[in-house]
Image 1 (cartoon, one colour):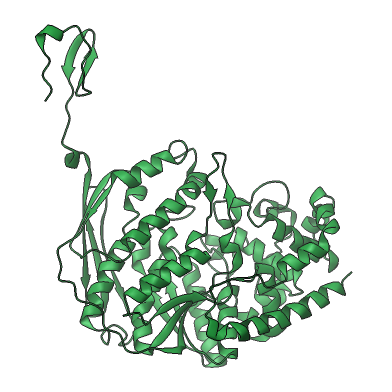
Image 2: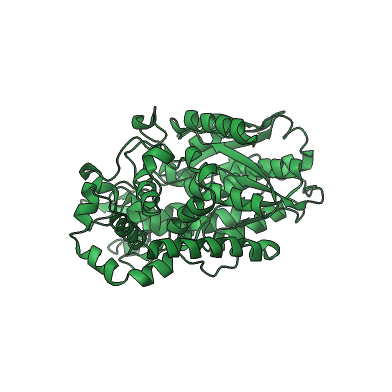
Length: 502
């Protein structure tokens, strides 16, 4: 409480604890700092089958549990379960201040997590992307989001620090978080070709309402055809993330999958968790304030190396995180799959957002930017999307224009394509479709644009840029030479095929 000196009664108050109204000073009712926050109690527990998270507050109440298949969890040491529970509980709830649009005080019954600093670093890197996606809805510029981040707090329980226990791992045993997308398939095929033994794990997110049934069918079909098993792990914790066109919580998706993969790595004595992060994940733009926007920061080269430090910390230094395809662009990835692994890939391929009812009976919904992008990239590389990859819609019909970046506007929605960072690569794909004599309405329209002429005049440079192996420093050195040789030979053949189109 602030008291005024009567001798200074004509002076304005020196504190914001009082305000002037109609020439009368009234004391404003203030609460202590901790009472101005919304309390959220969060409990993480190890269960006989996995991990549970319970959330109790006036804003959100949830009781969720992840259960591992077979004996993957029961064979995981108790000290490892404690550490993993600490980290999973935080990584799936750290974004709640953003999601709930409030200053919150999160009180955990779990110990201080290894991922605490990493999660907040991800939030900081994502702030400009948040603003780009939510502009007009969440205040102005980045500051309100930064304020939410800085004004919210997390408290953790006092726990006895017991280090994790891991067996000596085998480098050749690797875990691949597998989505049935083009990047996952190339990682898997290359790993097998160089003699590695990949274990495939599909993490099903609750937001993937329609894709789940398609993925289960693909898992069954892949096993019937190749005898390759794909582990299926339902992830109810994902329901805590933003849904639809939202983003909050997804900035830590790869971190969450890496942590969820650790019990599989223990069971298989796997030395590596291998994500499928290609070179475009490093792409960025600057907003009007000069802030760097990287919508795929958690898949970038820097993030991959940071995430490897986390998995090493939770495995006695035994499990590293990496990627094999950091030097490849998306057009090149599709081209290599066609050149080298076509019969083993396209009939199982699914890379659709599958967020609308249109995806209920189709593994390619035909309405999202991912469907559009993959369709034109397949055609550009000489793959028939309908006959070979299971598409049911022509994604180059006139009504699909808003899904592309090549007609002067960013693609619809708020997915990765909406940032416009792949406009040049997409323009090259359209031009390649033109060279392959495609006559669909959007190809004809593209042929009349200024962008068409730009691509035509810079064709050789663009082919070299998007169909060459870029320098990168992520691929493990013991396999890098073999992997690069596979990619380089395929890309040479692809460039030769493209030359023949001219």
